[in-house]
Image (cartoon, rainbow, N blue to C red; front, side, top):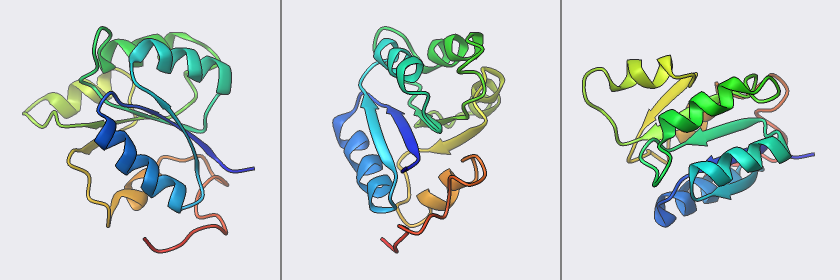
Amino acid sequence: MKPVILVIEDNEKNAYLVTFILEKYGYQVIQARDGESGISLAQKLKPDLILLDIQLPVMDGYAVARELMKNKDLCVIPIVAVTSYAMAGDRERILSEGCVGYIEKPINPATFMAEIEQYLPDGKKGNALRRDP
C-alpha cells in the first residue's frame, strides 16, 4: 500500500506541483483546498503525513494545526508546513503550533523529496517506486 500524504493547499498551482512530485515518487496524494476539509479528510483517512499551507482561507494553517493536535488519533501524524512565511519568528511560531517541520515556498523540486521524507514514519519512505524526477 502506498504511503498517503494529505496536502492542504488552496493554491491550485502549488497543489499541482507538490502532488506531481509526490506521485512521481510513488506516494498517494489527497488534496484539500481549505482547513476544514483538510481536518475532515485527516480524520477519515489518517494519512502518513500532512503538508499544510499556512495562508489558507477562512481557517489558517495555525488553526488547522491546533485542531489536528487536539485529536488523539491525529496528533501522532507529522505535520509539515509548506509556506511562504519566511520572516523572523515565523518558523518558530509554526513549530510551536504543532508542526514538526517547515519548508519555504517556492519549493525546490530537486530537494523537495529529501525534505519531505525526513518527516515520514519509518518504513514509509524510500520505497521501491522511487525514481529520479
